[in-house]
Length: 255
Image (cartoon, rainbow, N blue to C red; front, side):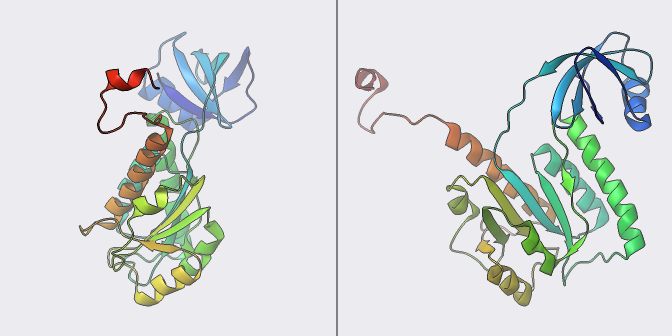
């Protein structure tokens, strides 16, 4: 079903007017037909509507939504523009809650205030488009470009830094705790300097490994999100009552 985002207020049996970008996408790009049903996301709630004349939609129903998985904050160092934008799109599809871009010592990209403002506008639009495409009922929060020292303000219940020199504890070790919220820091193409990694650890970010392979920065970010998604479904899976030596038929009566 086609989906758009709208600003409130929204209510049953009411007409809403979409903004110019959303209306253009729904009516002109997707060529939505008269009376066709669409999903309208408004302030985290999902409504069902019928398309009327551009830019109006009539709301006739509401969908119940359920929150799935932990809140995930991804602190990602600035990397090359095309890679960073690709990462934004895929991170939105994989369920990230908040993205915090930051400048690191080995960041190839350095932004002044004017360029950062233009980039933020473009990045926000990429995230909106990705959320709309994958039928998310919430938008990804994009924090301002920060310094590494500012990342402590975005800490969660579980706080991690992906560090290539950490070999003992994998990301999965920490996710087994089923935290309600996770913040993970991902470095730039050249990784974190020893000083930066040390500062993050002192600030309460536990170092973790993402495996034996060397991952690109954008791949590492998506790997973290995929692991969080997997752990969410594992924790929801009902426990089995089968032992290694018993078949389902033999154990069914005891269960």
